[in-house]
Image (tube, one colour):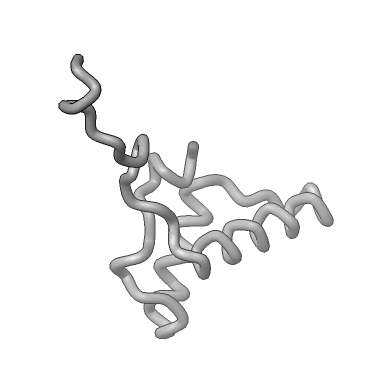
Length: 71
């Protein structure tokens, strides 16, 4: 392609996880590291995030899908 026709955008400029979601997921991982018997799987994390949304700690719009949590 000619240089004059190239577009300079960010690669993969898609949606990102909200800061409060990242903080919650880090807490889940730290709990698991502290006590291996208290293990959180992706489905458990999603359920806990939905519970937090029910308690008005998070909004439902920022909760990622199960596939995104797994990755």
